[in-house]
Length: 280
Ligand SMILES: NC(=O)c1ccc[n+]([C@@H]2O[C@H](COP(=O)([O-])OP(=O)(O)OC[C@H]3O[C@@H](n4cnc5c(N)ncnc54)[C@H](OP(=O)(O)O)[C@@H]3O)[C@@H](O)[C@H]2O)c1
Image (cartoon, rainbow, N blue to C red; front, side, top):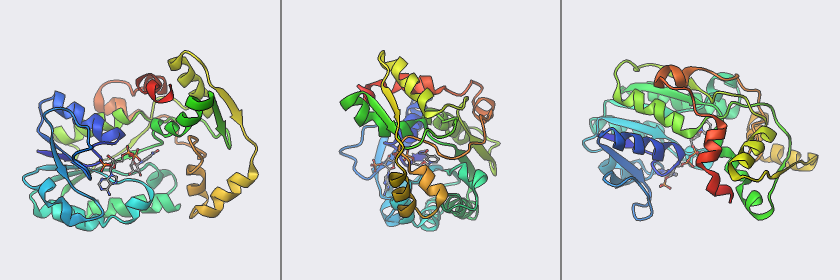
């Protein structure tokens, strides 16, 4: 039995679908079982990562755990050591953690350090561990969806740098391999999409999927950027808070997804096609 946290999110839902299709027993963890949409036949268990004791039923009888922390506020309130400790006592043998490539590219930044701290707890857990370090998710551009739907426009605070955003389904495909094959214990996998795209390239891809290209406006708004800088714990965090834009220099496209799954990483164009209804 594989327990999937973040089961209703972009990565977890894709992973559950893949496990279900392969006939692998899986259990979805959600804070609200009544609201959670999971594939038919997948077991659902309620649990809240910020309250480790609430996860006891979810972990019972499980052999492996897919662990996805949510970003920001929630992550800060998760006692990860308590969560993995509970998993180990429940008999879980293997854990796959979704960390972040910032642990490698920006280790001295606030989000890079937090990712490394989370990784260290999992490495010390006594479970067989594998770490996934994804770069920016393609789904971050959903931040543009309300303005595209309402006005057909994308306004960005800065045009950013080309970024090989990853389709969340590819993180799921890698997790599927790691959870269902042997030989990944102690591995750290950096994951990106196949091509660096600027925000304007991404708007074009969304436009191609919609059949109508949204306008792209780069706003020169130093006050908005200053405000983000004031709210953020550091410069890297501020650059990550720009809606839909990766303001950080990327490591460039990596081949890990293809090496691990045997098929090329999904393109941003594919992601736009898969999610076009969010923009209509
Ligand atoms: N976005 C990026 O560019 C990026 C890049 C690298 C790494 N990451 C990492 O990816 C993770 C998040 O991805 P995302 O924001 O895209 O996720 P998401 O798809 O928005 O999914 C969030 C999931 O977390 C669950 N959740 C929220 N609070 C919870 C809690 N207290 N207890 C248990 N489950 C909870 C939600 O489930 P319910 O509502 O059903 O409970 C939902 O399934 C973070 O670890 C982030 O650091 C993101």
